[in-house]
Amino acid sequence: MTIFALPLLFICPALAFVSLFFDLIYQKKGNAFILLIAVVLFFWVGLNYIPNTDSDLVRYFDIVQIDSGYTSNYFYNNLISSGSVLNLVQDSLFFLVSRFNNQQLLPAITTSLVFFSGFFVFLSVKKQTNSSSLFKILALCVFLSLMRIDIAAGNVRNISAVALITIGIISYDILGKSYFTQLLFFVLGLSMHIGTMPIVVIKLGVDLLYSLYKSKWLIFLGLSILASVSIVLFIKFGILDTVINKFNEYSTGDVATSAWFQILQNSVKFKIYKYLIVFYLFFTIFLSWQQFSKFKSLRKLNLFYIMTSILTLVFALLQPGSTFLRYFYLQIFLSSFVIMNHSNKVKNKAVFILINIFFIFIFLYYQIYYIGINIDGSKFIRDTFFYPIWFEA
Image 1: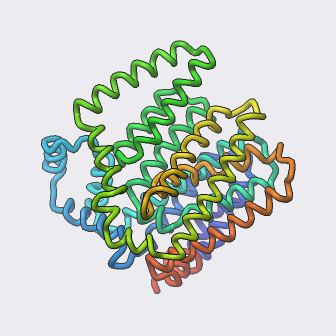
Image 2: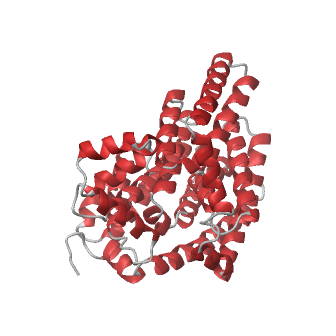
């Protein structure tokens, strides 16, 4: 059905999304084509995400506006001379968008990347686990409810970084691609946002321990050398200080004490949202631990999920504001893995299904709530899902 998605954009875009979701669940071949259509459809979603004046996305628009006055030579020479090469990917994204006379390309690109990554995980796990259609539907709905549109389109740097890192992890651990593929996406992700460093460190640590456990000495030796060289370079070039400063900034520094963080801290709805996520994390950690203890396949990915979820829990329970969300993005991307990997062996199936349905509805509410806060929600829904692509209201 995905083959009809593009023509349906010119008739009724909502039907195009229905056809995409149908093929994500039921189609057994043509994953590359399905992902391509997903990129197109969610590029359209991002184009229609027009932020309010006080939105975080507007700050990124200002960067794009500044970059529009630079030539390519000046931009990259300045990037190198200022010592900002570490931010090559994120700065290049802003510069690329500045070449066009449409700032909406920025949320369009990030939204398409984010949902590409989420569906890439979904399709990869679907192929590996052979779960039933019911659990595929549950997994897809959980991801779609958790992955807020305002984050996919408006967060830009951090969510894109986690999306890139997730692609690398799944490529290596599920699809069996080379370790260098995973490292490449790690480098791209870190260059998009250095704050994702803890995720990469945990993953490399899990890989190191697992290679030792499985007596894969070549991988163990290579990772040991890589870790040693990385530590030296991070210290020498001040990258470690940058990560620590970023952590302090969001823990006790300017960001943590800013007005918008204080508003979040005092918001009852946000507190409920936060502790619902804590509940979700405890639930999925329990599922992953069961999978790690009882299942033979994908145990390394289970261990990684558990460790990163504990990190997110620590941030959620001890840190102010929305800092924890920066690490919860990873659990969102891996949500379909936790559900579909558990489906065929779950005992109390009815309870498992009901808990997931509860999460779907409660997070769908917050999906709609945060869309309404950050943009004109009714206009966004009309323009994205009901007006043909050629129609101008």
